Image (tube, rainbow, N blue to C red; front, side, top):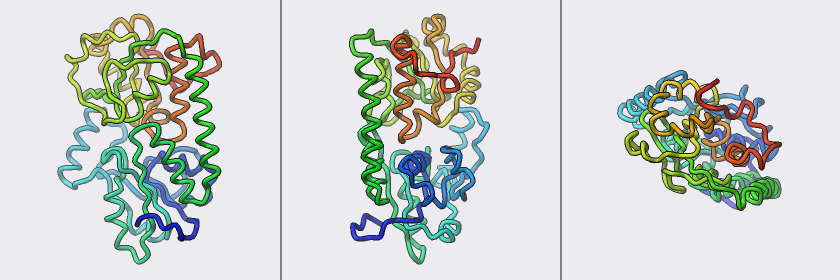
Length: 315
């Protein structure tokens, strides 16, 4: 299921990863997309397409503690968090399936997809995205572009992302760098890894906990009490803005303990993590701009955070 340089250009694409779905559509290839994952929701026109994966237990509406427990049960009982509708994939007869190799919890992992689809009469090519940092996100855009015969479109997409990031870097240069505590999960608490520390740094912030290009790290609340950040970012992986606000309210007291100064100053923010931070796709550049506007609002008056971020706790 590797790359075949002589293969025909794929015309029927299945994406088992929301960021891959976004990349396909950003490259103008949405009409080739014949199936998506259970969590693909952007752009809106993809939502009517057949869904070919599902979690072993329903996760929608659960708290972060409930999701953590459900994930652990699924891994214990099934060896995976998700199941693939293999018959549905076979019926759609894709010639390219997109998946990921970064996290067994966030989306269908490549190993599971390869194992499930290898028994089909005509197994499709499986392309794995392995985005541990911003450079790998960009590489993933180009990989999909090349695989789909849209290399020039992918290059143009990447240039657009890089140009916007360069504007942010130019504007934050020389500005006071804010000390930022970002939380990617609340129960148990996790600090960010992979590309999120890079986004914070590009936006003019310095994380007090979390390492780029490494997995998100579980921490204890006691370990964070002395951090005294200038800014608190609440970004539970996969949560939209309203979900993040509701979930953060459950932990208001402990959040005041670890980031009381930031909260009192009005520099604690809930963000739409699902759209702009959790996914390794083109909208990470929007995430950089949103963070820059939160950390240095005077430098980014044109960047709207309405519906994308909100002060915590709500006023």
